[in-house]
Image 1: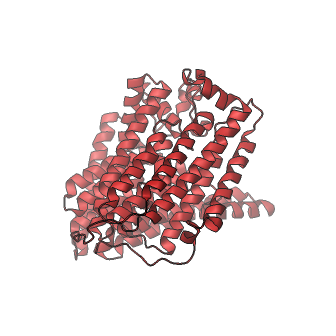
Image 2: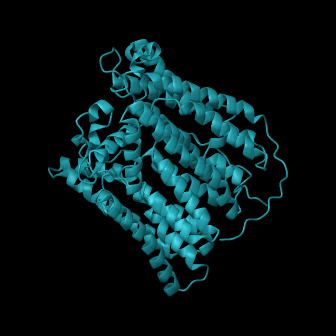
Image 3: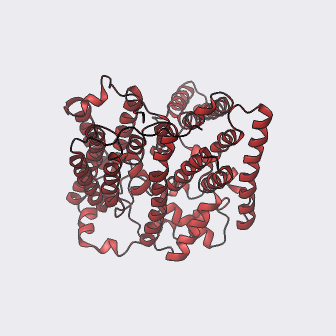
Amino acid sequence: MTAPAPATVATARTGRPQVAIIQGFIGSMLMLIGSFGVGWLSLASRELRQVPAIIWLRFEPVGAVISVILLAIGGMLLVRSWLRLGQRIENWGPESRRTILAATLAWGAPMCFALPLFSRDVFAYIAQGQVMVAGLNPYEDGYSQISNYLQIGADDLWAQSPTPYGPIFLWLEEMVVRLTGGQPDLSILLFRLIALVGVALCVYYVPRLAELHHVNPNRALWLTVANPLFLTNFIASIHNDSLMLGLAVAALYIAARGRFVPAILLVTLSIGIKPITLIFLPFIGLMWAGRGASWSRKAIYWALTAGISLGILWILGMLNGFGFGWVGALSTPGSVWIWYAPIGFLGMVVALTGDALGFEGWSWAEIVHKVGTLASLVFITWFVFKGEHAHLVRRLALALAAVVLLAPMIQAWYVVWLIPLFAVTGIRDDWQVKILYFLVSFFMIYAISDQLDIFPYIELSLHTARQLAAVLGVAFATYLVLLDRKTRTLFRGSRSTEKAPLT
């Protein structure tokens, strides 16, 4: 990797960014209040269910409607605030760092106290922790083996599926459950603290990795950490992807600075959270081999990188007694599909066509999904073997993007995996950043209208609540793109800056 170039900009001129920060704080506070009515609340959370305000927001139709409105408007206001913050920072000099960190803190702090939003995965973490405490094998025994898992709040969809997480996160799940006795509210607090460690790692390492690529570190930080998708998925939703990604980004930076064994240790810890970051290993091996390395030298360092990492994982498997059981569980998230994923949509079309012709259409869809997986492996191989040494992180970003785009299921947090890798290697201020703007807007609309915890015995159906949230989200996005005089310019035309370089 190349050494960082010195920044020549001494100051940062800003156009009242505090206005955007305050607006985003208001949006996050609205999401916090809305979460008490339609965020996920365990049946075992008896104390919270006795709070009068939460009772009214959750169990009265008017309260539930207000919660949906607050969540939808708050989420979309946060998107607008992020866009406006980028506009109000007129020069991405050193002084803008404090502004971006202030925004991240102001927008993320209310989410730390929200009920889990947009995902029930944290309840699955608790249930899997109970599987570990019970001495069962989470790679063979789903959390349906736990008698009260529905009381915990875990999704029944994955109740009989093996956990797709690595040994490190299994131990974290077990630790949390042992410390809290499985009490959901305390467990959620501890899992959120774990997620915040990943957020802190990204805050620290994203700008440093950007500097190594001669990309403005402050703009990269804004694109990544102040991003509403990053904040909602890693703080409000409490996904373990936060720690996985933070460790992986830290590993890339340390490897780029020439400390390869610690980097391999960090990326192995990341793999021990979620094994998707196995894809980082061949690129770190190429960094270790060095610029202009022969194929034989590359092969040696690939072997060393894989040997160290897999050796550590083997030791971890011996310690927990589960071996490499996580390998067989890797297919668990890929067993479903969604309509907006290109491969998922194509599979649906093929399935409907097959059914119309009298065949087993969904067996055809499974073939489409497998072809997408094979195609992603081809792209990974291409980016590992082809490209310039100086562009290794960009090649990694493209390889991981192929994995995401060619999967039948694309979750919002899969997109968040990609943002820091592209941000630190340069997202131009043209169609590239516009794609990110649209993705953030789309996934926020989808999030606020998808997973809502609506009490089934009130006069507001889940379907109606989702429709209300979707209408509000689409209306707000339409305003941002077409009517708002400030933000509509971001979605059309071109901008003068491209990569926002340091020099």
